[in-house]
Amino acid sequence: MAQKRDFSITTPRGTLSSMTGKNGKVTVKLEWNPGFGREKSEGFSKAQAFVDSECLRLMNPLAPRRTGFLIKSATLGTVVGSGSVEYLAPYARRQYYEHKSKRKWFETMKRGHLSSIRKGAARFIAN
Image (cartoon, rainbow, N blue to C red; front, top):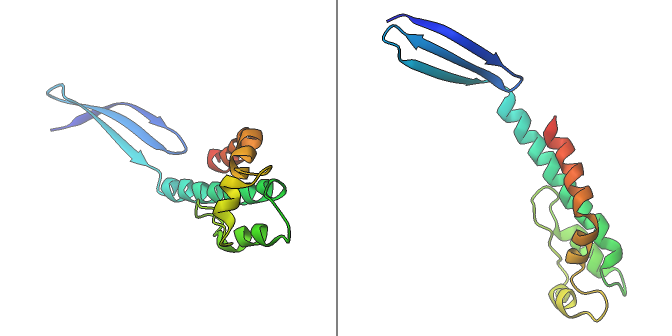
Protein backbone atom coordinates (compact mmCIF):
# COMPACT_ATOMS: atom_id res chain seq x y z
CA MET A 1 0.00 0.00 0.00
CA ALA A 2 1.47 3.34 -1.05
CA GLN A 3 1.52 6.21 1.40
CA LYS A 4 1.41 9.88 0.55
CA ARG A 5 3.46 12.26 2.73
CA ASP A 6 1.13 15.04 3.87
CA PHE A 7 3.55 17.28 5.70
CA SER A 8 6.86 17.29 7.50
CA ILE A 9 8.18 19.48 10.32
CA THR A 10 11.93 19.55 10.87
CA THR A 11 13.63 21.01 13.95
CA PRO A 12 17.14 20.67 15.40
CA ARG A 13 15.76 17.89 17.63
CA GLY A 14 14.21 15.82 14.86
CA THR A 15 11.55 15.46 12.19
CA LEU A 16 7.81 14.87 12.47
CA SER A 17 6.14 13.46 9.34
CA SER A 18 2.50 12.76 8.59
CA MET A 19 1.54 10.20 5.93
CA THR A 20 -1.86 9.12 4.63
CA GLY A 21 -2.36 5.65 3.16
CA LYS A 22 -4.76 4.68 0.35
CA ASN A 23 -7.38 3.61 2.89
CA GLY A 24 -7.28 7.06 4.55
CA LYS A 25 -5.33 5.89 7.61
CA VAL A 26 -3.00 8.63 8.88
CA THR A 27 0.37 7.68 10.33
CA VAL A 28 2.64 10.09 12.14
CA LYS A 29 6.34 9.33 12.46
CA LEU A 30 8.80 11.03 14.82
CA GLU A 31 12.51 10.67 14.05
CA TRP A 32 14.98 12.09 16.56
CA ASN A 33 18.22 13.53 15.26
CA PRO A 34 20.99 11.05 16.11
CA GLY A 35 22.99 13.35 18.41
CA PHE A 36 20.04 14.94 20.23
CA GLY A 37 19.91 12.56 23.21
CA ARG A 38 23.66 12.66 23.79
CA GLU A 39 23.75 16.46 23.58
CA LYS A 40 20.87 16.87 26.03
CA SER A 41 22.39 14.35 28.41
CA GLU A 42 25.69 16.25 28.36
CA GLY A 43 23.78 19.49 29.01
CA PHE A 44 21.99 17.99 32.02
CA SER A 45 25.29 16.68 33.40
CA LYS A 46 26.92 20.09 33.05
CA ALA A 47 23.90 21.77 34.64
CA GLN A 48 24.06 19.38 37.63
CA ALA A 49 27.77 20.07 38.08
CA PHE A 50 27.02 23.80 37.97
CA VAL A 51 24.28 23.48 40.61
CA ASP A 52 26.49 21.41 42.92
CA SER A 53 29.47 23.76 42.68
CA GLU A 54 27.29 26.86 43.10
CA CYS A 55 25.67 25.36 46.21
CA LEU A 56 29.08 24.66 47.71
CA ARG A 57 30.36 28.13 46.82
CA LEU A 58 27.30 29.99 48.10
CA MET A 59 26.97 27.95 51.31
CA ASN A 60 30.60 28.57 52.24
CA PRO A 61 30.06 31.98 53.91
CA LEU A 62 26.81 30.83 55.54
CA ALA A 63 28.14 27.71 57.27
CA PRO A 64 29.51 27.96 60.79
CA ARG A 65 33.27 28.12 60.97
CA ARG A 66 35.69 27.82 63.78
CA THR A 67 38.57 26.07 62.04
CA GLY A 68 37.18 25.72 58.50
CA PHE A 69 37.05 21.93 58.77
CA LEU A 70 33.28 21.80 58.25
CA ILE A 71 33.48 23.66 54.95
CA LYS A 72 36.46 21.64 53.73
CA SER A 73 34.61 18.44 54.63
CA ALA A 74 31.86 19.48 52.19
CA THR A 75 34.40 20.08 49.44
CA LEU A 76 35.95 16.66 50.02
CA GLY A 77 32.66 14.83 50.57
CA THR A 78 30.86 16.13 47.50
CA VAL A 79 31.29 14.65 44.05
CA VAL A 80 30.43 17.63 41.87
CA GLY A 81 27.82 16.55 39.35
CA SER A 82 26.31 13.83 41.53
CA GLY A 83 23.41 15.96 42.77
CA SER A 84 24.32 15.39 46.40
CA VAL A 85 26.26 17.73 48.69
CA GLU A 86 27.75 15.77 51.59
CA TYR A 87 29.61 16.97 54.65
CA LEU A 88 32.13 14.49 56.07
CA ALA A 89 32.58 16.20 59.43
CA PRO A 90 31.04 14.02 62.16
CA TYR A 91 29.37 17.05 63.75
CA ALA A 92 27.92 18.52 60.53
CA ARG A 93 24.36 17.27 61.05
CA ARG A 94 24.16 18.67 64.56
CA GLN A 95 25.58 22.03 63.45
CA TYR A 96 23.12 22.17 60.56
CA TYR A 97 20.06 21.72 62.76
CA GLU A 98 21.17 23.11 66.14
CA HIS A 99 23.66 25.95 65.60
CA LYS A 100 22.44 29.12 67.37
CA SER A 101 22.94 31.64 64.57
CA LYS A 102 23.95 29.76 61.40
CA ARG A 103 21.72 26.70 61.28
CA LYS A 104 20.15 25.37 58.06
CA TRP A 105 22.64 27.22 55.87
CA PHE A 106 21.51 25.34 52.76
CA GLU A 107 17.95 26.61 53.20
CA THR A 108 19.28 30.14 53.81
CA MET A 109 21.40 29.94 50.66
CA LYS A 110 18.43 28.63 48.66
CA ARG A 111 16.19 31.51 49.73
CA GLY A 112 18.71 34.05 48.48
CA HIS A 113 20.10 32.38 45.36
CA LEU A 114 17.60 29.86 43.97
CA SER A 115 16.60 31.92 40.94
CA SER A 116 20.19 32.66 39.92
CA ILE A 117 21.14 28.99 40.26
CA ARG A 118 18.14 27.97 38.13
CA LYS A 119 18.99 30.53 35.45
CA GLY A 120 22.61 29.38 35.38
CA ALA A 121 21.62 25.73 35.07
CA ALA A 122 19.12 26.54 32.32
CA ARG A 123 21.92 27.99 30.18
CA PHE A 124 23.54 24.55 30.01
CA ILE A 125 20.32 22.81 29.03
CA ALA A 126 18.98 25.37 26.53
CA ASN A 127 21.78 24.81 23.99
